[in-house]
Amino acid sequence: MRKPEEKKTVRRTVLMTKDTDNDIIREAKERGIKPNAVMNERLIHHKTDNTPSKMAEFQDFANEAIRMIKPYSEKDAKLLERKANKLWTF
Image (cartoon, rainbow, N blue to C red):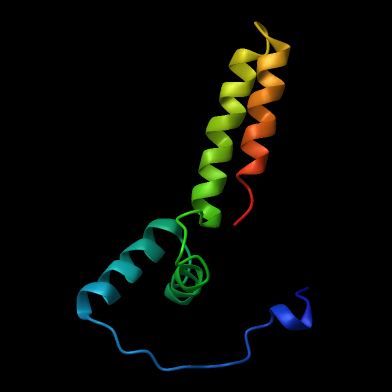
């Protein structure tokens, strides 16, 4: 259940180009989410490209790299894990 301050309660009408609308719809279909979720995500993360979906993908790559490095160097694996965790700040 969402916290009261996280609930979306305000509705706004937004005018955009057809190309932007098509891009939002395409991304929503690719990701299996609603266009509204894509629009909210873009608004929240407009100053950075560290969106939740991109960060999850990055984390998957980091986890795989850590698994590959760990047998050879525990120290390097821990360093990579620590650096990847720092990037989770949006």
